[in-house]
Length: 274
Image (cartoon, rainbow, N blue to C red):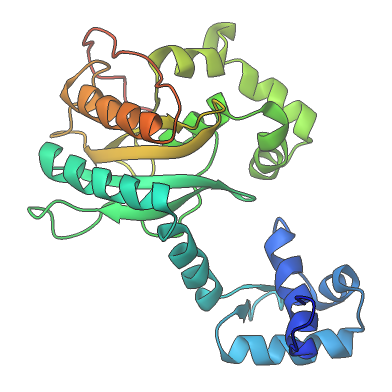
């Protein structure tokens, strides 16, 4: 509570429940949630009932576990969308979408991994394919995840990667560090200047994710482009790679950072992931 101002104590106490859910890696049982909030299960349950009524919390009927609800996601996305830097990125994503004629999106890092916070669909395409707001992208199989995994500190991605692979953080990082033939996995992504995937988030799609950096060199945003493999130029150094790389570089400069480097010479499209 701010000094000298009256507030509603029950709101502040109830916030502890929401904060515990937001900080947890997965949905929680009532007993674990109550323990995290240092309150009795009966007291925590009363707050949960009220939060469910307004959509801040949802309960899975199959497991009885609690998680953040649709209202919480809407509030979070609205807050992110109103950041000045993200507003500029949304405008840039819209321009890129119309220029290349394919879906574009923006992703930021969250405690659960890279999350899609904005999507743009070209006017010629009636539906946003493969992505939706609030989608959390896997680190190891998606272009967005690979982009974030390549440039974020290893300790920042360890717990997320471990949950994906059902292994310890140390073991998961060791597996991520090398790709086929023992080649450094993250180094290959950084050398390309973007994360790529063929067949993810759904079969028949090619996806790229270009990094956006701030003044400290920290990855703050992923610029995603995707489209059907039959129509999408998925070549490194191809039309879409060059266009998206240029936009990501301009956004990095706006954030005070440097870009990931020039596009390589155009190559053949990457082999489809089986």
